[in-house]
Amino acid sequence: MKLEELRRQIDAIDDKLLELLNERIEVVQKVGELKHRTGGAIYRPEREKAIIERLVQQNRGPLTETAIEAIFLEIFAVARNFEQPQRVAYLGPEGSFTHQAAENRFGAMSEYIPLHSIPAVFKAVHADRARFAVVPIENNTNGFVGETLDELAKTDLKIVAELYMPIHHSFVTKAQHLHLIKRIYSKDIAFNQCRSFLLEHELDAVEYIPVESTAKAAKMAANDPESAAICSHIAAKLYHVPIMFENIEDNHKNKTRFIILSDFENAPSGADKTSILAKLSDKPGSLYEFLQSFHDANVNLKKIESRPAGEEAGFDYWFYIDFEGHKDEPHIRKLFEKHKDEIKYLGSYVQNG
Image (cartoon, rainbow, N blue to C red; front, top):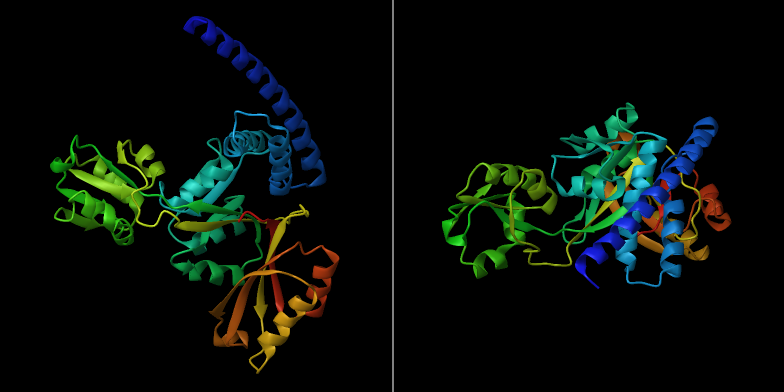
C-alpha cells in the first residue's frame, strides 16, 4: 500500500474522530446545564477514573493504558471547560513542576494562575479567584512540605484529587555543543540532584549559577546562547530552549505528590483515600489510643506525619494521616463519630499511588 493511500485512511479516521468528539461535547454541555441547575461539581475524579478503567478493560491494542489515560485526560479537561471555564491556581512560577502537574490534570484549555507562595494559592480559591488549587505535599526524597500541611490545618478547602509525578530534569541549551557552554543556571537543589550527569559530561568546571527556580533558569538560558539550564521539560517548552538531554537526575525514582483542592466533596469511587488532621491531647498514650481505633476498624493507614501546632491551639502537635477508604463508608463514619473532637477532615479522593 502506498503512503498516499495510508494518509487518506488517516484523514478519514480523523474526520470520524472530530465528528464523535463534537457529539461528546454536545452531551457534556447538557450535563453541564443539569449540574448548573442542581449545583453538582464539574470535576469528578472518581467518574473519570471509572471511564478510563472501563476503556482499558475493553482495549485490544495497540494503545497502552498510559496512552489511553493521556488521551482521555485531555478530552476530560477540554470537556470541563465547555461545562464551565476552569481557572487553576498553582505554586509558580510558570514552568515549575507544579505547573506541569496542574496541566497534567487540567489540560491546555484551562486558565492557570501562578502564585509565589503556598498560602497565596490557598487564598486564591478562598477568594473565588480560582476554582482549584494545586500544591506539592510531599517528595519521596525530601519528605513533606511543611507549608502545605500548615495551610491544610487552616483551610475549609477539601483535597479532591492527588497526583504522583516523576521529577525529571532536562538539560537545555541554545549552544550547539557542550564545549561551548560557559554557564549553567538552575535551582541549587537541582545541581545536587544531577551531580553524576554533570561529572560524566565534564561539566564540573563550568560556572554554576543558582537561581530561585528551574523555570527562571530556563528563561535565562533562553537569552544566553553560551549557557545551559537544568529545568523541567515544560519550562524548556515555555521559553523555547532546545532540550539536549532528558532525565538527567541521579535518582530516577524521585517523585513528588501533588494535591488538588477545591470547595466540594467527592462521591465514593470504591478505591479511595482519606486525609485527616488528628488534634490529640498532650497526654501519655493519646496517639496509641487514637491509632488503635483504626486497627480495630480494620482501616489501613497509608501515611502519618507529625507537625508542631502552636501554643494557641491548646496542643503541642497534630498529625497528618492518610488511610484507605471514603469517609461515607459505614466503618469509617463510626471512626469519625468516635473521634469527632479530634479529627479535622481534609478530603476523600481517588487513590492514585
